[in-house]
Image (cartoon, rainbow, N blue to C red; front, side, top):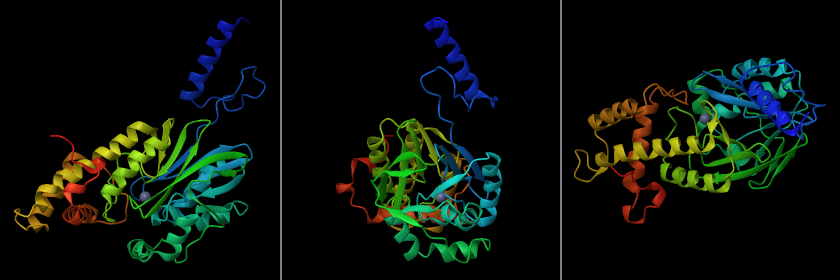
Length: 331
Ligand SMILES: [Zn+2]
């Protein structure tokens, strides 16, 4: 077979495998092509609420899971999907300490007892300290949230690579953004970036920690740290091109900040605070700009809480010393 024909046949096969579940596509051993395309990560999205994701990465020695969903019940649905692969699970990785990503760990640990839970030292500390009281809040919002958390079996320093199941993943840690601390996992041979909640797909994020400016700076750093990232696998919403998800998240945060800013001007009706009317109209404006974006948290008032948190943050900022990343978009 000549080289050109071989390349054409390989390209046709790759396209077919990328668009359909075709027997043989994932077992390309024996092919005389130099390397088979790695199997894309599997995903289970719980609609309970906000499309919370857990992923499974095919490593040489088994599956590596990323995040554990909100509750053991949610995790059991993911477990049923994972078991269909027939693969052994070798590890569970956590991206951050928020309840919707750690609450299902016990069920996964029980189903896959040989798979240790890995987290950065910072995430492990955040889970044990729970300084913001998120876990009691999660339990009061959802009785299915576990009474006791499952902590990491193994910890690592953010920024050091992790080697699990024959796979090497780069890590990077970020603080004071969407969450107080967050870890992303990057697979260099595929360009897959598991971003947790740093960049999510078409969902209403939780801005209640009041760090949108920190989060915007993190998005810039994330793009610079992984310039070759191709596909981003977010903690909520559908995976997509890494650049697009980062740009969309940046656009969302900057737009909400720009909407809230006039309401916290000293000359506005409630001065640097928010009047009930301002709050209501801001929630409506955000909903109108991002219609149908499901909330990521079990918090019926997430829209109000978000605009209140952003208002507090903006009122405390010094516009003269605002990082470029946090500037409002040009009108
Ligand atoms: Zn989340």
